[in-house]
Length: 421
Ligand code: NOJ
Image (cartoon, rainbow, N blue to C red; front, side, top):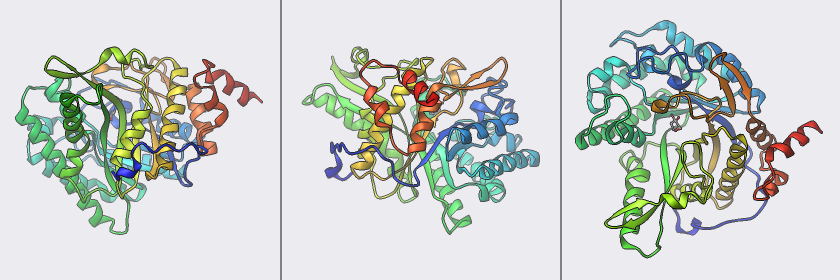
């Protein structure tokens, strides 16, 4: 990032640029239900049954004022067996994307969001170089059908998180301990991104921006002058935030940033570890993730380059919806400051529109602007969905809401009065 941007805070009105994209994000396996051909099997069961309820969900997003939506398509539905494409599933996605366009939404489509067809996984998944070829063959098949209804392409989602959960935490399918597997997977995902980028540009030479969604973390050292802590910051920043972009440079029309995590390194003995005690001074999510709004400002200014940035995901798992209200106001305030400081942010996609299947953590984490009752599949917009709508409507963060932060007043109560007025 240009040094001049670092730390520059501006205190002007918190307006967002004209044409800013406001939406939310989901991924197919997490919401669709009835997915049985992927490497996750039928663990998600019916999930949110969005496969059948997509109209209701998209209409809801529209009603909440969203002008954009990020979603993914499920490879294992479209190609359940090697080389056998299911035309009825392709037709399904065409219908669904057309519906979003009918609602006048800008469509951001993710081509790979963590799940693989079982047959691909059986051959080694992304560890196997051949998977890049299978992925490209699949894309060549589907792009001609769906391309007209897509405005922005996200090739792959969070390669680093995928590798972390599979080969380091080992809580995702095909978990194993192998550094070599991690390296191969990372390189193959980079190569898949580049292939997809080129293919999409050949197909749509006139435009349709292509990028990917990367998990960007903000790192900090506890002691400013600790060599070991600073080293930990630099190494993590390079490997987690920059390496993928470095390997795929020249193949991004925009940077897609998923922002969730802030880590402080504190030198304990010889290993620098994130300091968990400090986290207790901040709001945390139900998953124990620290609420640290400044981190998104740092991440944006640090990544800022000469191409646009979309925040492809940002959200909080919380059953306490007022915490989500505060989260939205504080994080968006920082996004707005980054814009004012010169970072070219063009859109924000809250994770997620509806509660959904949070991978190995199941259905317990509640990320949704809209609550899902999994017994009845009933959707109920939370108050935070209205706070978000209010921000979208004004294309700015309402000062009256912002003023309340830190005064212990529930955003919810004030907004209720406003809506009733
Ligand atoms: C990022 C992932 O892309 C998404 O699948 C996940 O649900 C959210 N993070 C929340 O953990």
